[in-house]
Image 1: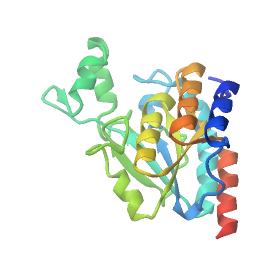
Image 2: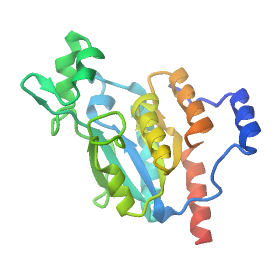
Image 3: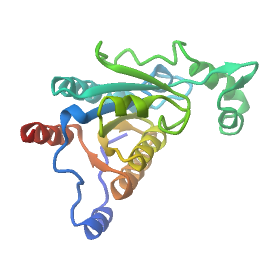
Length: 232
């Protein structure tokens, strides 16, 4: 996967609609969280059951951004996918029964079983003691019953989310859409997210910037936070 650019016609459409490309002039670091989606062995490790090869490429960018954000007083949240299986069934039976082949079903379910080696964060992720960890059992952690992420963020006074991780066009996009509709400010990080192809990456970034949030690089997001800190 390579760095992709939002097409000129999409930029022009956004400008015609709202008169500016980017949504926010500044973000308060203390009310902002970096939400890192599914950077687990099952998705990141070579040869893993649901491998996204490009996810390995974004590890340094996520780690650098997380370190910068901690220094600014922002919260880092690691969100990991997990599905419980009992008696030959899982807590997401429709997905495993229809979207995964018969041959791959058991392997995929085992990879995302809570506490298993494949379900754990990729060891290259630089996690700090003050970071938070949330498990989800659907693409988006914000739908009812999927996780406690929304309540956790509300309790911390967070109103802005920087979204990183994989897949850009699946769990990251679902998270961004739901977060916006729950009235969080949303930024999809173009260089801290990974899909299976450039086309899927670009399509999601274009969807998000038109309807669901901003699209920025890690450095551009840090500049927003610095402006918010200076204004406080």
